[in-house]
Length: 437
Ligand code: NAP
Image (cartoon, rainbow, N blue to C red; front, side):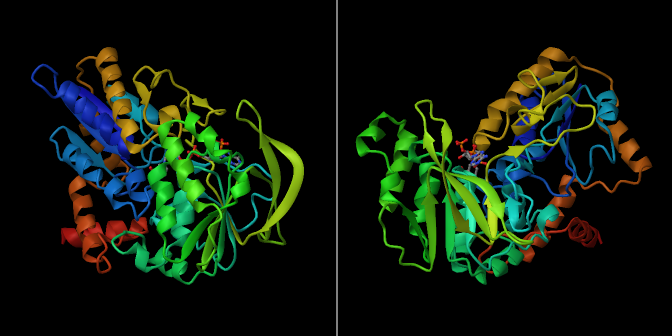
């Protein structure tokens, strides 16, 4: 029997569990017990609190994780915080393998003067706010003036689209009520997307970019002068070529709806200014060199802003005692191996890139490593963890408990919405307690 603890119940965590079940649960596998530990009482990590609420088809992948969660070999151990309730060293004693699937939930700082002014928010916080993450439920971002979104990736697109949609356009989504109400009364007539390089260097994918062209109260606008000669598009790979075709479609379009989503290319934020709150972003024009690098031209201008959301990537928070690569913002690892018995998977292993599906081969790779590095053992595994947590008075949330919490969320949904999420850990635990009566 292999005893495996996976820390984090997002895509990388569940794919690791699925990989371990495939690897060890068959007739010749020797057996496996996987405990998926999460600090929240609810599972699925980025699927629940990262993927945009109006992208329900992407969120549907959670059903696949549910199949894994309901397997006899896998258990969800929610409401347990590593470092507070149990340490990595203790888990390494109890389990044959400990896999860090903690994602990259911390914002990379912009690193310009004024980036700590009120009104400057990282995308992890902003996305967490509209997705009901307990850490960001009270964010209440300022929406009483223009917004600036920094970055040219899909998170920037998510943020701009959420800022641009009407309440009606969230029908069928699970955006939380506090965000829906606040967005609906917002007075942000302009959302500027700042891209430090050009249209040929964006990291936005075609489907997501195309959505921006079909919003009822917002129009995306690109300055035709920013577009490279059309012949140059032929050299791009097909996905990027399609994205650039969308940008060409947005060029020169009249800004005839209440909200303008303006793409500002070759534009790098160099400072954020304001008296006690963000009032403007100082931007430097860039030029992109032959190697694709952006360099400042010295020409600067100001963009008025009440809200700045930086969507420039994420970092994995370090865990005491675990080797960490501060430059890359993730655990130091060799193909997922950190130290004997200790592994990293998903964004915690390779950084914040790729789609949800990229985590599947990642998780299966770790299961292969565990097969190669460990053998059947008589470690205490889950019985040992239960003993420790009971001694410490930790209220564990099981998958069955989560299903009860989920039922309560479904029952509380707005008409047409799949659920209304609880946005506080206390509310989640109270729903669990009510359902158990
Ligand atoms: P990303 O794709 O890496 O994009 C980050 C953007 O930030 C890049 O345009 C980058 O520009 C820019 N940037 C970085 N540092 C900057 C700085 N100091 N100043 C200005 N700009 C800066 O990251 P992401 O948007 O956070 O997305 C993370 C991953 O999740 C991606 O793989 C993404 O595709 C995925 N995702 C997918 C979906 C979806 O499929 N619907 C939705 C959301 C996220 P440079 O290129 O110049 O470095």
